[in-house]
Image 1 (tube, rainbow over the protein chains, first blue to last red):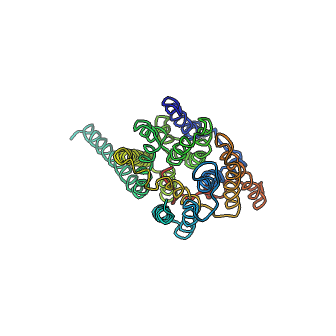
Image 2 (spheres, each protein chain N blue to C red):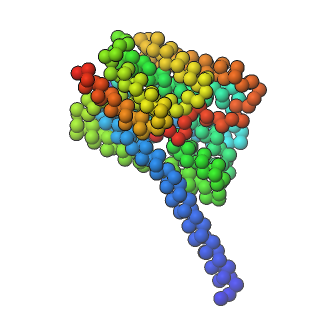
Image 3 (cartoon, rainbow over the protein chains, first blue to last red):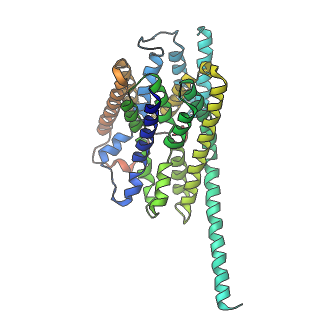
Length: 110
Length: 271
């Protein structure tokens, strides 16, 4: 992406964030979500973040899927899920997940 | 002392007392936010060095943290630029990822609607996962007070300054240690998102939403412009919503449950 399209990208992202965060406070009393939308919104974070993570660990190097045990991204991601499930602690998940990834990559000679 | 004098003295006294409670609110807000600032530290650091490693300029990396101020969207954008996604896909992803902030605002709005817009604007613009968690707790435990918005403001400013300091340090690390690329930072985002998602999967529909989103996004991974991400997210939300509607009758108001129960407030990234 060219220099000025990065600037445009950042400007757009900043505006999008304002468009999400401000209108409810701006309109305060006049604002009310339809119940169905409110319910759908509950699923947004889990769906989006998972849709980012899973392809990232299965396709770590371009268009070829690496569904095997020699893919350190995949192994470390599975370990990280277990760590997160057990500890429920974000910081511990990051630290141990990163350590697992580095160890696995070193092990596979990456 | 004349009556006017004593009235003035009382006024001055009241004035200083109220200033004091403003300062006190700010101090308490900052103190309540402090652990979350520590939690955001590694992400700021990682974001700064990752941005440099992916070929962003220091100014670009810093302007993201200064003006976008949304960790998950910033990570996502840096990753998607590296994989040559189209600009509109990154914008759409930013919108979808951060839609949760709309829920936070909807949750807190009753405590800010008495304030003038010059207050409401900064309190909205700097509303992150962490500040929401802090304010939600404060309003629930102690309710609103006359200067509660100073508590809120201090939490916002604390998070924002902290995020930018650690981004800057990350930028300096990335510039001075180009081999930082090989420190496994590319896995940092994956680990962070896993740590955010997993504790929030508290009901079967939430699990179904996440699993569907992951599978669909992976299946369509090789489509252009990362459209697979959008399809996966959309499929996940639809599946989650449908299962949820079957579990709980649709006439039951979603707002009767805490609307953010899909999200682990205490275990969030810098947002």
